[in-house]
Image 1 (cartoon, helix red, strand yellow):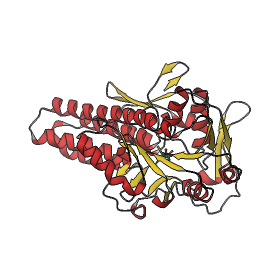
Image 2 (cartoon, rainbow, N blue to C red; image 1 turned 120 degrees about the vertical axis):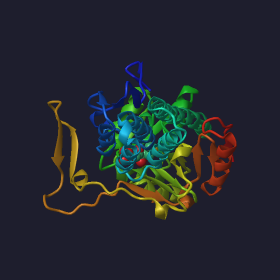
Image 3 (cartoon, rainbow, N blue to C red; image 1 turned 180 degrees about the horizontal axis):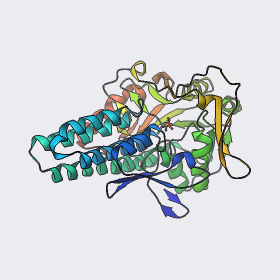
Length: 371
Ligand code: MRU
């Protein structure tokens, strides 16, 4: 991603320090947050300094590499096991996080089993974490190239939450096809749902689209049906945090409503996600763990006041009950197709993508198909 003309990834590892774009400050300030230990990195995930499925996956992989670096020789295995538990417990829904922790953990276990030296184990862990981040960026770039084939000149696309650069290592999932379409010379327009309660659409997607000079309009979460019914939305593209084997999709709270409205109005509804978001062990959306966050996110809001100070204010009476599920599940029946780096397919044909992935041996090296 280019920020003021300079290329950034959302997260990267340098000298055992995890660097990340500090997302709660955007769009008001652009700062890099640095985490010197795996526990600091885990905290950055749970406190959402870094957020978005692919970005927290890559960050979790780097946290594992830091844990390998920090673990003492005389207590290495149990220190690593403790780190696995701390990092896995940061956020429950995004499959990418578990995918990354397991990959680095498996590399460490294999290296220990093969009597590698401590230095070698640490190097292998860091290399695996780096590979996960690189694959995330590559997958998202491929999703963009494939997905832009679905976008016609003049297309008006509605998106929910932020599934752009900031949600991944680079490019994004739902927004990558839009960025590619623009680079191919197509005229595109994006409807941006504000995405209460944390306003990832208003804060992050709007900021990214501005950087990319793509025309868009920010709308209140409850306005999308209005524009769909007036035939001002040509397609919906969202990201996903976890996709079950049957094609059910967990994504930011409010996605399900958009999918139902899209079907009602005969508007295609696409989900874009890398293979690392698919949980092949999960039979259906009913089994996806849904994070519930604090009541304060619903009863309050954070923004910048006229003096340029970032403040949180209350928007509801005190002493009330609020509920705050962070994700919902959209049943496969509402989804026109899923766009991954391995191809575009109907949700009920997801298994075909798995076979493409298996044939490729390693993710990111396959020839994409459109099923
Ligand atoms: O901001 P988060 O981490 O709570 O939300 C996760 C997401 O980024 C969205 O659900 C997004 O649409 C999925 S694609 C990364």
